[in-house]
Length: 349
Image: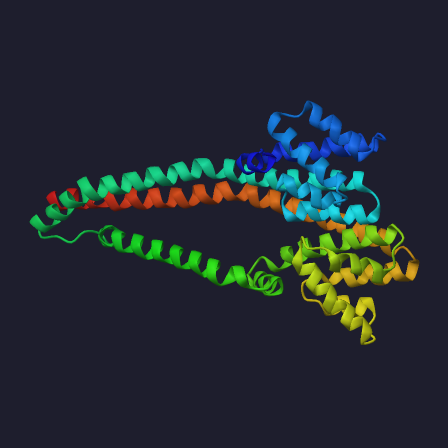
């Protein structure tokens, strides 16, 4: 019965992230996870109560916390935080960090959606205006220039040609979107995680940010595992055994094989194109001073702040860029329609 209900449930992502925050707060106050879940279930809405009941049953069977919380349909990167912090023995911190990442992702989605609403409305209005011009104004202008045996201005001629080929442009654009979608479904989705990352690194303007995101997660989790008392080999074993971010489990296997070939950890990191160049320096300094875990964790947090600032800057720029593009298009329409009027007035005079 519960399984059938779960399939119908659609829980708000922001609400789920707040649930993780509250679980973290209860655990930091000294409550065991089982008691914290009971508290949360007691005051949760019915849809969440069903999920908490499912999690409690999974935990009673001995299922790990990170696997039990898959019931909430959390993103894999959020579950990865629960996995790594569980291995570190600091689950309360894991719920806190998972909620921070979850809230950040949902906030970015919400802000992008908010920023795009007004530009999309203007785009639709521009399309409607374009259709009206094509139906009611262009035929009259064409007939008028034909009658007086005069050629329209260059910008108007280009506009007439653009209007004439709109159906073809639409068909080509729609076909490209369909082909891209099919290419993703049947090709890109089946690529290995390494190949996907390599392609992202090849995209102009994305290389630095992709490296920062990958290095952030790796250095933060590796640093905390080392601080928890693990050596590098044990920490890499934890990375290898997780299934939430396949890229890391695959790459750690390669790293471990390189260890057997006699390479040091710093040398291995330096050879990886998907890490920032500074990571090797941070590791070298940490190994020399004996504070490898602390250095890696601090560097990971630094990268998180930098990526966060970059995302905010990009979101701030999106709306003005769309407004400029729409403004230029409206100016083009204005000139294409009004210049013939001035031309005709000059001809009559």
